[in-house]
Image 1 (spheres, rainbow, N blue to C red):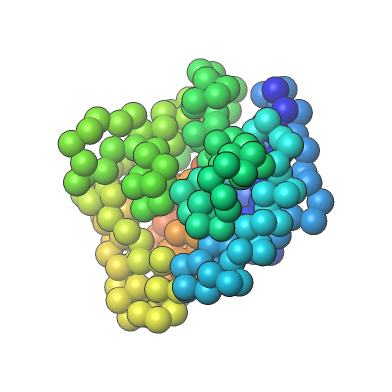
Image 2 (cartoon, rainbow, N blue to C red; image 1 turned 90 degrees about the horizontal axis):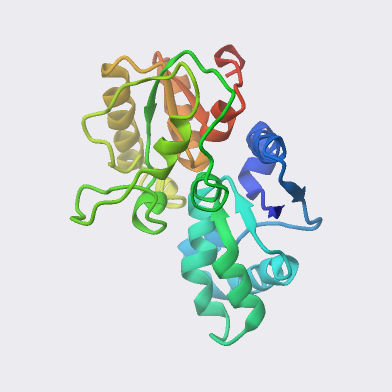
Amino acid sequence: MSVALFVPCYIDQLYPDVAIATLEILERLGIDVDYPGGQTCCGQPMANTGCQDDTAPVAKRFVDLFADYEAIVCPSGSCVSMVRNHYSEFFDANDKDFQNVTTRTYELCEYLHDVVKLDHLDVTFPHTVSLHQSCHGLRELRLGQSSESMEPRENKVRKILELVNGIQWVEPDRRDDCCGFGGTFAVNEADVSAEMGRARIADHCDKGSQVLASADMSCLMHLQGLIRREQSPITVMHVAQILTGRPLDAH
């Protein structure tokens, strides 16, 4: 197998270890990984703010850069959802490059679950973990079951993490509530956003979780800020870091 690795801009700038961990897990599985030079943002921040004219050239650059790859893997459900579900506003439906990119872009756990069909990992992570399921991952990529849906869905992120030895799972009471980030929502509605984040952190802490894990570093970035300011007894980690056995004390 061969893939192109797309690293979201905020991971590139703020959480490079998540990108490195993603590369490591793919290469450990014998996958040939290419990192296309010149990649930037998927355009989601501008699109969410309503700046369509600013989004269009970013989306076009993304499609031009990744059009010839058989698969594009990204450690961010929200960025993948942007490409798969929202690029249609900027391209003709019959554009072959657009079709190739939007049908071949995968969130990391989705790729490992659906394409690689991963069933074994020689990794140990002996800690108590709870899972935060991002809104984009659940409701746009269908990576798991959301409480408002009657259609049963396998939790692909949890299934992949369950391959890691030593994890002890705890479940929050409200397993699919939003963390409150929402990109520019956190700026425009800062108080509401922070209160939503505090509620998520309290739910996970109350269950005795040591590690709040997620497939979306944007959610974890928001929660990590609140955790650090309020000194809550929990650590955030991206699933890629757990899949490669990163030590807890490194976070």
